[in-house]
Image 1 (cartoon, one colour):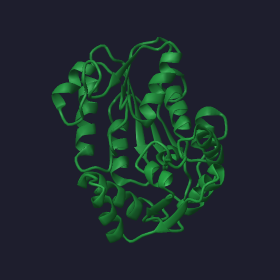
Image 2 (cartoon, one colour):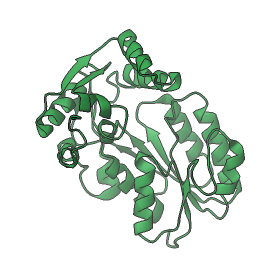
Image 3 (spheres, one colour):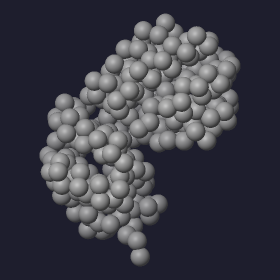
Image 4 (tube, one colour):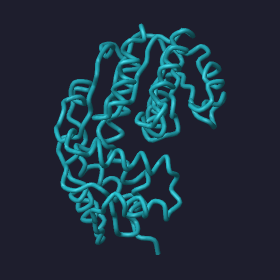
Length: 277
């Protein structure tokens, strides 16, 4: 891809999408943000908003919120992909999830779209510890999750964005499935120990049952859709199926992935994990 045509970034205000959009803008690439607050607005739940954001777009970064495992996601991604191709889109880059059947179904739809594509299949994000629902428990000093000793190759969102931007702006990434992991395996307990050490705070970790976890989320008025998703991810995807490392970052970027400890040091320095006074 040599010409700087406008790229639509779906989920352009989210963890990966915001970083993809920022990098594209820094490179001088025209960007359209696909979000409810965008102009024009985009909403996965309202198909009438899809066509307006696709006008004069040649490439799309597809990020489905909150996750491709959500019931109905495969159907919506398929319908959007069909509409995008009909409206002249020539390149699709999909953010996918590692070890999720529904995500792989979406990958198949993208691969069969008839246009250029790149799949960015990711393990659990480092930034879930600092930019999501796990932030408050860390600040409070006690993290309770379903995960036991299964290890996850946590991947940095900045690596994900780097790969996605390379796929959108450079030659050589068409038809590639990049499975992204960090450089080592960590259990959630071990991850919390690293955060505790970096912050100089006593942050405890507790494995709880599904019943206990559901009750805890319900007590915080967490929506049922999100409760279902988190329990699905912890009970199904974190069953050991992803307990291995891949070379996706190396293949896409020619360098090693960022280590979890580097993420922890950078994030701890911001003070975001400090206890509230």
